[in-house]
Image (tube, rainbow, N blue to C red; front, side, top):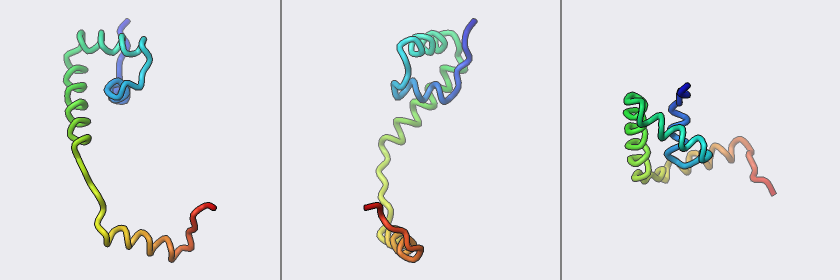
Length: 78
């Protein structure tokens, strides 16, 4: 019986967050299931694109967050 893998399983596979046994099972499933392979390729491409992104919030956004924090009396743990 071939196990059905989810997108979550494929993401864990991409980030190498699986056991050796799972790794082998997913590799085998990728060879046998064209639809799973297409999903894997799309996820791998998405992960690669996300890894290239660089984003920093604007100064006004940071300032708004800090002002909100001060207004609600949120304190950092000491």
